[in-house]
Image 1 (cartoon, rainbow, N blue to C red):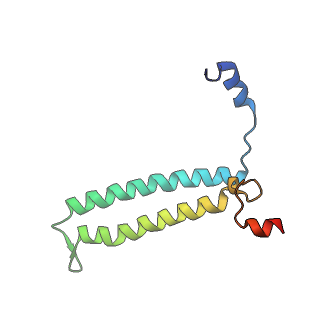
Image 2: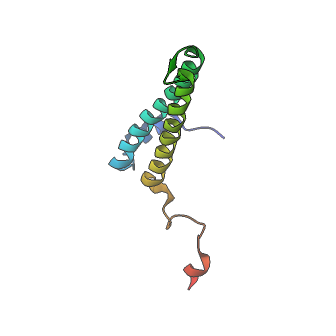
Image 3: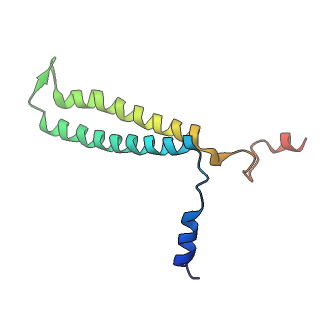
Length: 107
């Protein structure tokens, strides 16, 4: 089976996206949050490896990076998941072939 031709691909680019403005804004914010989450993960590892000998309030900076970094990582992950649930219109109940409550729909 052959793929789409170049002409079909170019014609597909001329069609308007069927994405709302809020979905486009969320996609931009989500990409920034994902990059921030990756940088936070790398920073936690780097700080915990490099800053073992420095202490602040009785704890090494490597422990502080874990104390602060892990909750921030979880917070960013929860924000991304909840934003996906909020702004994802493709999971519309009317379009789904699977009924969540099939007996209630029949009555």
